[in-house]
Amino acid sequence: MSSTHLYDQYRSQVKPVLNSKIEEFHLLGYDTIKEDELWVFLTKKKWKKPSEEIRISELVQEILNVKVADYMNYATIEAFKTADLFSVLTEEEKKQLLK
Image (tube, helix red, strand yellow):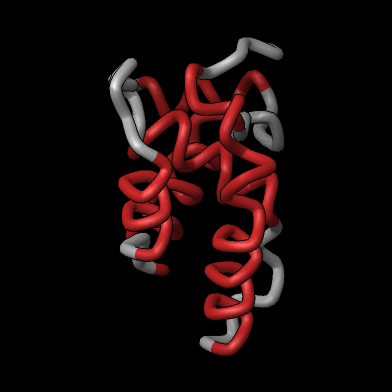
């Protein structure tokens, strides 16, 4: 799934801001969040409807306004979407659950 986002063209220009936000997350104890993960959050959640007339200053402001809770909520939901929570169950256990 390597679709491009309209704002991907600005990524190298806002990289210092992304790194600053990641450093902020790390200072708050969220050491596992990476730049790529933050970018995916921004493009899939925050910037679902990109604007052709966006200014870099607006992108910077939106990156700086990302809250850890918003990112963590998104990451948790995405983890549940991709996880097969029933893979550890046998067929018999699955049938029992569906009764």
